[in-house]
Length: 137
Image 1 (cartoon, rainbow, N blue to C red):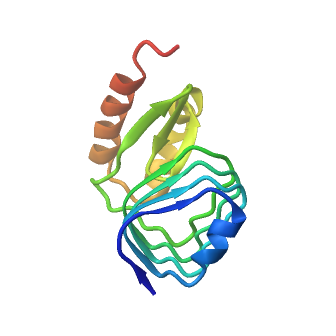
Image 2: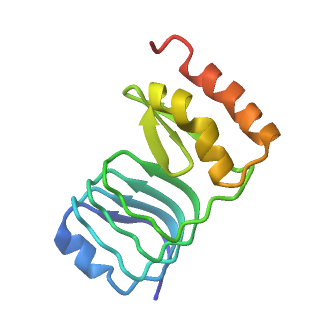
């Protein structure tokens, strides 16, 4: 079922209302810890502020913001060259991965290679990353 507009999920009762939704044309805010939307496959944007939230079928989204641990998005495919980087409270989000600055410096290149990014793409992301985190340490 397609939902035109935005959805805000503040608790599990809200999540229950949207169990059959497969597409959200607008923005989806998820604030309910452990919320699961098993059918959602496409969303304009998703903002997850709930530990343990699960969107097992989400394959495409205009943007995804994750502000919680243990979020599950196993089907989401990130388009190369379209990643965004965000810095919040000492952690950096690149694509769907959220880690400390130190973690990214130690593991970012290895992760990039594993995900199939070229040496040039990894180098470009490194420059953007260092600009983003400048003054945070």
